[in-house]
Image 1: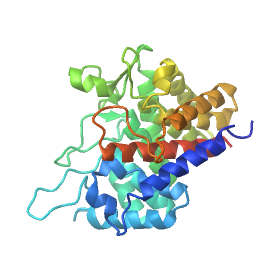
Image 2 (image 1 turned 120 degrees about the vertical axis):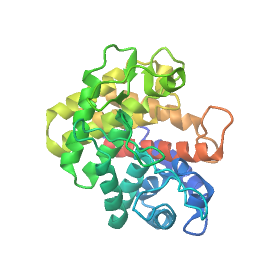
Image 3 (image 1 turned 135 degrees about the vertical axis):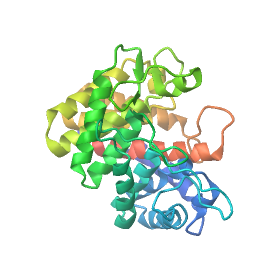
Image 4 (image 1 turned 180 degrees about the vertical axis):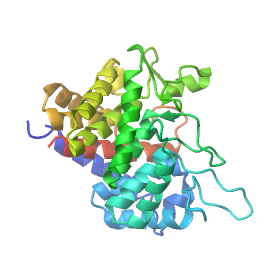
Length: 333
């Protein structure tokens, strides 16, 4: 099994989605930046660069560079407007995907600036990468998805010590879970899982089997990063931790595995298959990929299932799905 059997179908679907996204770039450098919030398009440049669309990536990064950096070097969540309060800082994941795209496309001026910001947000005691609040103050807790995303950026940009610290945070998080029905994704500054939330926040920060839907990207992205950290260092502990995260995700239903938050699991399963050659990972990657291929609309986009459906949400999910499919093909070679 040298590659996924449906690799060509995955490639065709991803490129169809990419064509839809390119139609939304506009003809100038600030098309997406001016029209949508940063979460809608932060993954688009990364998809463009791994798909080989370097000119479109360059153009998008120009718009981001010109419009989203504050005078102090912080990346903003929206362009600053004269006479209005400065927008909040971008979140960790948004900085991460742009740092990856900038580095892979040769815009090291942008990638090093973003990597420095991410390193400043990393907690020395835990290794977690903490978001900033609207005033630029570091939060009191870090989550596994943001830390794994930042870990990918550290690894790609050559900050191996920071990547190891992020891996340490993720190992603490999986080791300190107490049952297989819930996963508490946030850790405090002493690396203890935070277990008490309001009802509204619990739906975000507690991955629970009892819900009809669950945010499995909190489990998928750590698998991807830890597998890559294993390959970079040769340390088997990172691979073991990646497999632990994957095993936790396997506790959830087939319905959840083909739901809106499952795209990263296709990439995660492919990453583990690429290392271990175990059939269980191969089968899972194909199953999740096929579910997403079947969900694609005729225009190439992937809409979220929730209503109302905003175009910004479609942009975000289409970029994320295209990345998962393309990376799954590459990882499974």
